[in-house]
Length: 162
Image 1 (cartoon, one colour):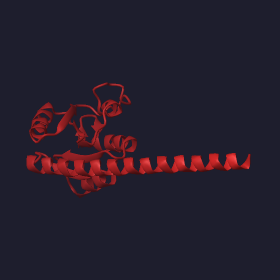
Image 2 (image 1 turned 135 degrees about the vertical axis):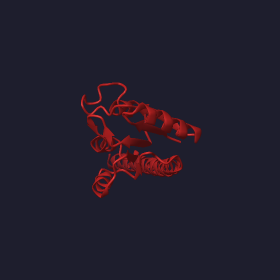
Image 3 (image 1 turned 90 degrees about the horizontal axis):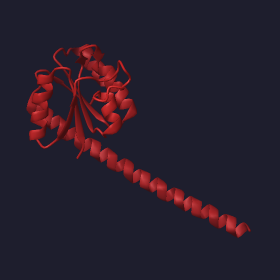
Image 4 (image 1 turned 90 degrees about the vertical axis):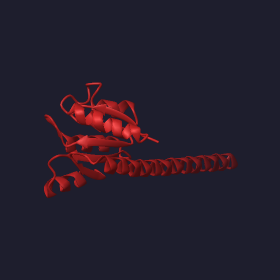
Protein backbone atom coordinates (compact mmCIF):
# COMPACT_ATOMS: atom_id res chain seq x y z
CA UNK A 1 0.00 0.00 0.00
CA UNK A 2 2.72 2.54 0.93
CA UNK A 3 4.08 4.33 3.95
CA UNK A 4 3.10 7.80 5.11
CA UNK A 5 5.68 10.05 6.78
CA UNK A 6 4.35 12.69 9.19
CA UNK A 7 6.72 15.62 9.80
CA UNK A 8 5.77 18.08 12.52
CA UNK A 9 7.78 19.68 15.31
CA UNK A 10 4.82 19.48 17.71
CA UNK A 11 4.57 16.01 19.33
CA UNK A 12 0.84 16.32 20.06
CA UNK A 13 0.10 16.81 16.35
CA UNK A 14 2.26 13.82 15.44
CA UNK A 15 0.56 11.60 18.02
CA UNK A 16 -2.99 12.57 17.11
CA UNK A 17 -2.55 12.38 13.33
CA UNK A 18 -0.61 9.12 13.56
CA UNK A 19 -3.46 7.53 15.55
CA UNK A 20 -6.05 8.81 13.07
CA UNK A 21 -4.14 7.45 10.08
CA UNK A 22 -3.29 4.11 11.67
CA UNK A 23 -6.93 3.66 12.68
CA UNK A 24 -7.78 4.18 8.99
CA UNK A 25 -5.36 1.36 8.11
CA UNK A 26 -2.30 3.31 6.96
CA UNK A 27 1.33 2.53 7.79
CA UNK A 28 2.77 5.68 9.41
CA UNK A 29 6.22 6.92 10.44
CA UNK A 30 6.80 10.19 12.30
CA UNK A 31 9.61 12.67 12.82
CA UNK A 32 9.97 16.07 14.44
CA UNK A 33 12.81 17.28 12.22
CA UNK A 34 13.44 17.64 8.52
CA UNK A 35 17.22 17.40 8.51
CA UNK A 36 17.87 20.49 6.39
CA UNK A 37 20.35 21.94 8.89
CA UNK A 38 22.58 18.86 9.03
CA UNK A 39 21.95 17.43 5.57
CA UNK A 40 19.99 14.46 6.92
CA UNK A 41 22.74 13.19 9.23
CA UNK A 42 20.31 12.87 12.15
CA UNK A 43 18.96 9.32 11.66
CA UNK A 44 15.53 10.44 12.89
CA UNK A 45 15.20 13.28 10.37
CA UNK A 46 12.89 13.16 7.36
CA UNK A 47 15.82 13.31 4.94
CA UNK A 48 17.43 10.29 6.63
CA UNK A 49 14.17 8.34 6.79
CA UNK A 50 13.46 8.70 3.06
CA UNK A 51 16.90 7.27 2.29
CA UNK A 52 16.08 4.08 4.22
CA UNK A 53 12.33 3.69 3.74
CA UNK A 54 10.21 4.17 0.61
CA UNK A 55 7.69 6.89 1.44
CA UNK A 56 4.52 7.19 -0.63
CA UNK A 57 3.09 10.31 1.04
CA UNK A 58 4.78 12.98 3.16
CA UNK A 59 2.62 15.15 5.38
CA UNK A 60 4.71 18.21 6.16
CA UNK A 61 4.12 21.02 8.64
CA UNK A 62 5.21 24.21 6.88
CA UNK A 63 6.62 25.75 10.08
CA UNK A 64 9.12 23.23 11.49
CA UNK A 65 10.80 25.37 14.13
CA UNK A 66 13.98 26.61 12.42
CA UNK A 67 13.25 24.66 9.24
CA UNK A 68 11.10 25.55 6.25
CA UNK A 69 8.63 22.78 5.38
CA UNK A 70 8.39 23.93 1.77
CA UNK A 71 12.16 23.73 1.25
CA UNK A 72 12.21 20.35 2.97
CA UNK A 73 9.52 18.94 0.68
CA UNK A 74 11.25 20.34 -2.41
CA UNK A 75 14.43 18.47 -1.46
CA UNK A 76 12.54 15.27 -0.60
CA UNK A 77 10.48 15.40 -3.79
CA UNK A 78 13.57 16.04 -5.93
CA UNK A 79 15.09 12.82 -4.56
CA UNK A 80 11.83 10.83 -4.80
CA UNK A 81 9.55 12.29 -7.49
CA UNK A 82 6.87 9.62 -7.00
CA UNK A 83 6.36 10.71 -3.39
CA UNK A 84 3.16 12.68 -2.94
CA UNK A 85 2.85 15.55 -0.45
CA UNK A 86 0.34 17.19 1.85
CA UNK A 87 1.22 20.53 3.43
CA UNK A 88 -0.23 21.48 6.81
CA UNK A 89 -0.23 24.93 8.34
CA UNK A 90 -2.13 27.04 10.82
CA UNK A 91 -1.27 30.10 8.71
CA UNK A 92 -2.57 29.75 5.19
CA UNK A 93 -3.15 32.60 2.82
CA UNK A 94 -3.04 33.01 -0.97
CA UNK A 95 0.72 33.51 -1.01
CA UNK A 96 1.38 30.44 1.14
CA UNK A 97 -0.95 28.33 -0.97
CA UNK A 98 0.83 29.45 -4.15
CA UNK A 99 4.20 28.49 -2.63
CA UNK A 100 2.80 25.10 -1.61
CA UNK A 101 1.60 24.36 -5.15
CA UNK A 102 4.86 25.56 -6.72
CA UNK A 103 6.81 23.26 -4.37
CA UNK A 104 4.96 20.22 -5.74
CA UNK A 105 2.58 19.47 -2.89
CA UNK A 106 -0.63 17.71 -3.95
CA UNK A 107 -2.83 19.03 -1.15
CA UNK A 108 -2.83 21.56 1.65
CA UNK A 109 -4.76 21.30 4.91
CA UNK A 110 -5.30 23.97 7.55
CA UNK A 111 -4.55 23.27 11.19
CA UNK A 112 -6.30 22.06 13.15
CA UNK A 113 -6.46 19.31 10.53
CA UNK A 114 -9.86 17.88 9.66
CA UNK A 115 -9.29 14.14 10.20
CA UNK A 116 -11.82 13.05 7.58
CA UNK A 117 -10.19 15.24 4.92
CA UNK A 118 -6.74 13.98 5.90
CA UNK A 119 -7.74 10.33 5.55
CA UNK A 120 -9.49 11.03 2.24
CA UNK A 121 -6.47 12.90 0.87
CA UNK A 122 -4.04 10.17 1.98
CA UNK A 123 -6.21 7.50 0.39
CA UNK A 124 -6.34 9.39 -2.92
CA UNK A 125 -2.63 10.15 -2.94
CA UNK A 126 -1.65 6.58 -2.09
CA UNK A 127 -3.81 5.39 -4.95
CA UNK A 128 -2.12 7.89 -7.27
CA UNK A 129 1.36 6.93 -6.00
CA UNK A 130 0.69 3.22 -6.47
CA UNK A 131 -0.76 3.73 -9.96
CA UNK A 132 2.27 5.77 -11.07
CA UNK A 133 4.66 3.26 -9.48
CA UNK A 134 2.94 0.41 -11.37
CA UNK A 135 3.16 2.32 -14.64
CA UNK A 136 6.87 2.97 -14.11
CA UNK A 137 7.49 -0.70 -13.37
CA UNK A 138 5.58 -1.68 -16.52
CA UNK A 139 7.61 0.77 -18.60
CA UNK A 140 10.82 -0.47 -17.05
CA UNK A 141 9.84 -4.04 -17.94
CA UNK A 142 8.99 -3.01 -21.50
CA UNK A 143 12.31 -1.14 -21.82
CA UNK A 144 14.15 -4.15 -20.46
CA UNK A 145 12.43 -6.47 -22.94
CA UNK A 146 13.17 -4.04 -25.81
CA UNK A 147 16.83 -3.89 -24.79
CA UNK A 148 17.00 -7.70 -24.73
CA UNK A 149 15.47 -7.87 -28.23
CA UNK A 150 17.91 -5.24 -29.57
CA UNK A 151 20.85 -7.08 -27.99
CA UNK A 152 19.63 -10.37 -29.50
CA UNK A 153 19.29 -8.71 -32.92
CA UNK A 154 22.81 -7.27 -32.65
CA UNK A 155 24.22 -10.68 -31.71
CA UNK A 156 22.40 -12.28 -34.64
CA UNK A 157 23.81 -9.62 -37.02
CA UNK A 158 27.35 -10.17 -35.71
CA UNK A 159 26.99 -13.95 -36.15
CA UNK A 160 25.68 -13.58 -39.70
CA UNK A 161 28.53 -11.19 -40.61
CA UNK A 162 31.12 -13.75 -39.46
